[in-house]
Amino acid sequence: MDTDVAVVGAGPYGLSISAHLTHKGVATRTYGVPMATWKNNMPAGMLLKSDGFASSLAAPVDGWTLGEHSERTGVVYGDREPRVTLDQFADYALDFQRHFVPELDTRLVSRLTAEDRGYALDFGDGETVTARRVVIAVGISHFAYVPDLFSELGDHVTHSGAHRTFDEFAGKHVAVIGAGSSAVEVSAALVDAGAHVHLIARRAEIPFWNVPRPEDLHPSLWMRVRNPSSGLGPGLRSKLCEELPDAYRHLPSDFRLEVLRKHLGPVSPWWLRDTVMNNADVRTRTTPTGARVEDGRVILTLESPDAGESALEVDHVICATGYAANIDKLAFLDPAVAGSIRRVGAMPMLSHHFESSMPGLYFAGAAAAGTFGPLLRFVVGTEFTSPRIAAHLGRRSGGASASRT
Image (cartoon, rainbow, N blue to C red; front, side, top):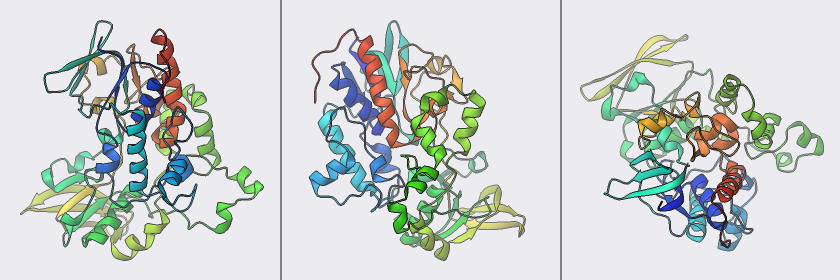
């Protein structure tokens, strides 16, 4: 075998797991473009919705929280306010990578197959690397969901994750489909770029966070008990999801999927409310029922209990319809491997140590949420995931060499 462990993915989960494995002396190779989803698939200038205290990668040594990094680099930081910028977080994560995973291989895995005593990773360049165990820790960009209704629109439809900037839409009419924070983030960016924005949502309203009050930053004991803080956001359910992922794993699978689907529904940042609600054509309680291209433009058929059936003509459609973790969407995963994995819905069923039913194949991040719950959709989930996987693989490696910092 060329290496003991191969980590596929170089976002927060992949980098955190690799850092812990290397620190334990486990022979590890990590593959992927560092922070690719964050750098390429999120609107430029975005503010993170997660609080600063919940936006740190999991380091195996002290001194590497986002707050500590911001202090070292002279960047303004607050555990809650001001909000963390996308660039601030990406710069921090890239410094983390350079320190803990300096030998990152930026090639993308094109095929992962099983073989005797391990796995083979191909890269499309003629080289194959073999590994005893593999950790798949890819980002959400693999799981972008576009409704079938828009499948015939060709280049006239994209997912929200396909865009970082929106200058190409200046002066054009763009329909944004969705009611969550991605839809609002994209709509605000389109407004700023000079596009004519039509936000189409089935919900009765576009929900926004409340503007924080001074007392929210310093809550009373009663408020902390009634509405506890967590890395997933305030509230008892979020706190339980953060603190009890192992208990979540033992719930009935159907109930787990229902919690995953409903918990933390679409809510958008308060600071984007005026930009979107005052400048976009917002149509709530409206469902797209048809989509076709005529003379180079998109004709959408819309249904609303208020306006009945209507038509909307636009230049482009952006589906801010979220991400649905599904291992069948991992194009690099050999069908024979994917077909052998037991599932919770479309996600892999995992053991206490994040191992799938394919021995030696592990999953982390969004793909693990079907087993461990909403925590695995957040950066703060790296603190739970990385030490556990590294400790397990460290024991199975037959002994570790001296730890690294």
